[in-house]
Length: 339
Image (cartoon, rainbow, N blue to C red):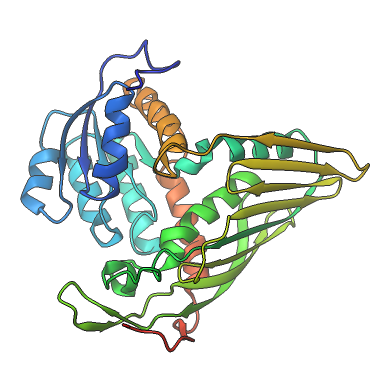
C-alpha cells in the first residue's frame, strides 16, 4: 500500500466524503485512502438521505462522483455544508447548469475542483512540456482518436448513459476529457461543432426490457482555438474492437504523437526523433493520473488555495459540449439492438 508521497507528507490530515458507489467507490475512495487521507464514508449517489447526512458531516472535502443529472443537487449540498468540492466530469447536464454551480461555489467561497484527472497523466504532461517549450514550433492542429468496444462487447445494458435528458451520451462521458485535454494543450476554444450518432438504438434494461437510446454513442467533432489552431475528435463507444487511443499535435516545426498514454514520440522537421515511454497504469486506467491529482486536491484543500482544473474549467468544457450537441438530435445509423 502506497503512503503519502512527496508534496503531501507535510500536510495535516484531510477528511473526505465520497458520493458514488461506482467510480467513486472503485477508484476515488481507495486512492484517497492510499495517499493517506481519512475517507470517512462512501455513499450511494441514489441514496438521497445518505448524501444529505454525509454533506452535513464534519469533513474537509466532498468528492461528487454521481451521474450528471445528480451533480447539481449534490454539489449544492456540499457547498451548503461549507465543504470544498471535487465534482466529476462532465459537470452537470448543460452549460446553464455548470454556470449556476460555479456561481454558487464562488459566492460561498469554497474550493471547487473538477475531476479532469488526465491532466496528471505523465504522457500528457510530457506533451504539454514539449509544446510549451516550442519543440513543435507553433501548434497548428490536434487530432484525438479513441475507438472502444466498451458498450458493445459485451452489450452494456440501458441506463442513464444512453438517455440525453439525464446527461448521458459519449460527448459527456469521453468528450469532456478530450475537450479539457485540448484546452489544456492548445488554449481556449472559439468555435466547435460535431456530428453525433447512435449505433445501438435499443438496449435491454435491468429487467431485460428493450429501451430506446437517444444519447450518442459515437461522434466526430471539429474545434477552432483563439490561436488559430484547429482540432478534431473521432471516437466511438461502440466499436467492435478496441484500439489504442491516439493524440497527435502537428506544429510548424514538428509533430508529437501520444499512443495510449504509454508512448510519446516527437519528430522534428530536421528528421530528428525522440521517444518517451511510460508505464501503463496499474489496474484501472485512471489510477496513475488520479493518484497525482488526489495529492494536488489534498494540498489545495488544506492550504485553502484554489487550483485548476476548477469549476471554471467545467464551465469552459460545458460550453464546448453544448456546441457539439447543438443542431439536430443524434442520427440513428445502426440497426443493432438487443441480440
